[in-house]
Image 1 (cartoon, rainbow, N blue to C red):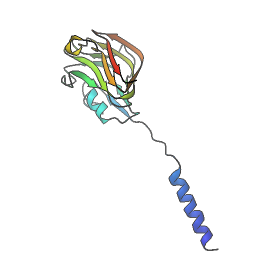
Image 2 (image 1 turned 60 degrees about the vertical axis):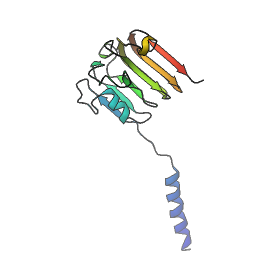
Image 3 (image 1 turned 180 degrees about the vertical axis):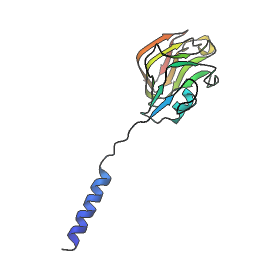
Length: 159
């Protein structure tokens, strides 16, 4: 009889170890003045894990205020991230200042861009992709966005 309680306890421990744990996505809050969870959009994306959201507070995020040399883009998108404006495209603006592109990504999987205005992006080499340039295994979903830029979108996706 002394073995039965041990088996029950071991079974209960094993069951707890095998139960899937809920992992909560984190929200990285970015402010245009650099005082959020990360100083720049790129720093927020770099800190985020797949499934996390990078939320931009209302404001204008310019190419020069965001570092300006991130592969000639405001930011490189991260794998499986959501990038969204907090209150909508009228109040959250990403401005390439015609100095470089806005967003790029290589093999980033499924990413979402929501509630943003993207403007004044300059495509690298004069081609396409001034707003968003994706290549490889990348899938983009957008919602509530305003894009006003040269060479809006360029994609070379693996298929």
